[in-house]
Amino acid sequence: MGLNLAFGLIDSAIRFPNHPAIICNNRSYSYAELNFWSAQIANVLRSQGMRYGDHVMLLAPNVPEFTAVYYAVLRAGGVVVPINTLLLANEIAELLEHSDSRFFFAWHTFAEKSLLAFEQIDSCQSLFFIGAKRQELSESILAHYSAAPLHQPNKFVLDELLPDISATSDDENDKDNDYPHKNDFEQTSSNETAIILYTSGTTGRSKGVELSHFNIFSNALYAKEKALFIDHNSTAIAVLPLFHTFGQTAIQNASILAGSTMVMVPQFEPKRTLREIEKHRVSYIAAVPTMYNLMLQTLRRRSFDVSSLKVAVSGGAPLPLSIYNEFEQLFGFKIIEGYGLSETSPISCITPVNAQVNKAGSIGLEFYGTQAKIIRLDGSTADIDEIGELMIRGHNVMKGYYKDPSATESVFIDGWFRTGDMATMDADRYFYIVDRLKDVIIRAGMNIYPREIEEVLHHHPAVREVAVIGIPDDALSENVTACVVLIEDAEVTAMELQKYCREHLAVYKCPKVILFMESLPKNSTGKIMKRTLREMQTEK
Image (cartoon, rainbow, N blue to C red):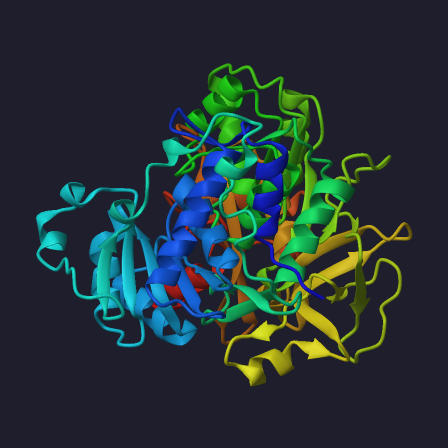
């Protein structure tokens, strides 16, 4: 069956040519402009010798160029490899080599590290700087700038190779002029790889997750139509990084399929996010708990008109009940908590917007077309409310890890994907994440789930953020350690927090150690890096 995710953009441009597709930094880009832009970038790639199935790396923040390049690569029949903007030059080089990327698009502010990475890898043919003209690049970059013949290792400023996108017609009836490339996209098999996403590495080395056109298309389509009910009149705000699977599917691709508007925030900042929601009458947001927490703290101090917001989705990490409850008080509706991984495109479970029941603390029901179950360590199916490992099967599950068959084999059992998350399922088939399997603390033979302790500490009025980890102990196997960030100007002692825990938890679950920190290490999506915290403590 033929399917190319890029047709979603082409179709929306035909139906809604003058409708704003993207708003960023007070500049609006229509679907006609975005489609024309994408088609021209695809032509540039073809002119540089891009072949069907070539891999193209993309390093950019939440800017319109990200979406234009993303869809250009797909429409040219390539595979997009979006990577984390926080990576260093040596890390970028490793991924360039591992992903077999022949072309590399880098946002101009990342030019220096991108160039350092590019010049280490012989297999990458061309580097394109995006978002700037040549004279806007630094002298150190210009010193390396090359205009070598085509089909040789090249460095280009993309804007110099493209016509002005404002040249697109404003005449809605002049379809042939608006869409000179409306049929100019490669027909691909639905099972062919569209995206390679490198995992965040929160529990180990990054792996390249291969997602097919059907994986991505179906997940975005069902999110739009079966869970979030995004339509042409919706306005979403992109605060999640688009290089991450959550932002790509739940914001970018769902919005493009709906022909709706996406307000881009290049870097999350709570005041700016609330200001953009107010200014552009945003109706839909997807974010991680850390982002919601910071927005709520901002709203306590300053008022914004956020009455346009109707749908809020949380994912990426468990949502503390204190945030869930305060959000409802301030916004007047409940956050929808969903669940997924890069390997599941990502949505696997969610509570649909129109569901009669939204259970606090639950990641919701099985996503449309997806099956989920809880298994015991011996592989048998767990009972209702029994803790076990969450397994997923369906249209959303990845093809596998790129060039890593042994890792792929290790995460599948009889066609079911092992998530590595401990969870329960209630009698209504609502699922609840208990904790990451690798984060479970074993103390004197007892299993302790950090999330339970974190929930208690989150309710303490002095606590802003908390992460609970296990630190090796010769006598008890592991000690429970709570890493705490306090609210500004709040005062509380470790003994007071330990006493607070004993009032709400069994003694064996209570933290033996309370560590006060100025901030918790997070990855680019706002997820707390517990592995980093453990390394910091064990190195002492």
